[in-house]
Structures are given as structure tokens and as C-alpha cells.
Image 1 (cartoon, rainbow, N blue to C red):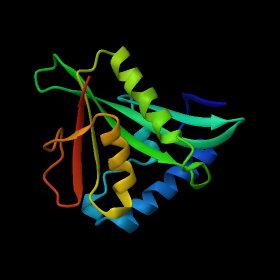
Image 2: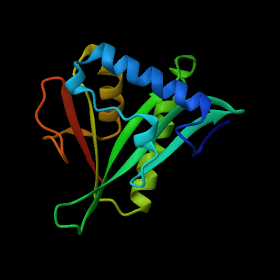
Image 3: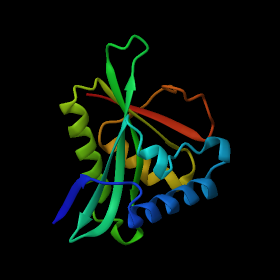
Length: 157
């Protein structure tokens, strides 16, 4: 059975997965269009980080970053560092992680969840996953700017 729990981004196997994720992002997108976070950033106070494991084996990870509105009244979130291990792809791990993150955002009374992903074909499965789960394209949010290599998506909760 796959379990999703809070985890430490610096944990050895997680660190390796995050390193692969960053390497793939820089191999796929221009450096100025890479918005993936490293393990240090994922340990920040505004970010909650989870891993999916089966019998101790790492299958994937994901994070939820708190975004406060300009007026400070509404809370929103951003999905960060969604990644599945190569051996776990096609097993529904990303869907389980996404649903876990969305459930957590709802429990925190977030108004919206945002994300940024790439426009390249490499990111097509991610875009399909998010669209299947109700996300629609939107304008850049938070500190992002228009970028031909980025797709911005949102889900109203």
C-alpha cells in the first residue's frame, strides 16, 4: 500500500530524487525558466513537503507552498516539486500525491491552488494530470512573469 507522509527533503533518497528533478529541469528548459526548488528551499517554513512510499521505497514527492494575497486576508497555495521515480511512473503515484496536496489545501481553507510547469513536450504528462484534476491555465501568479517556457495553472477550491 502506498503511504504519503511528511518527510525531510534532505533525506538521502529524497535528495537524490530532487537532484534528478533539478537536472531534468535544467536539461529541458532554459535556466531562467527553471523554477524548481532545491532541498534547502523545500525545507522553508512556508512549505510542507511529503513523500509517497511503499514498504519504505520512495515512489515520489510533492510540496505545498503557502502564498498569501497582497492584502493578507486570503490564503492560497502553490504546488512545488511534484516528481515520481522512474520505476513508479504509470502507477498513479502522481495522482495520489496531487489529491493529498489538494486535500491538505482544502483543510487549510486555501482559496486557490496554483502551479507552474513547462511548455515543452516533456511536461505534457504533467499538464494532462493537472487538467484532468480540474486545473485551468491562468496568468502568472506570485512573483512569476510571463514566460514562453512556462504554463501557469490554477484550481479554485
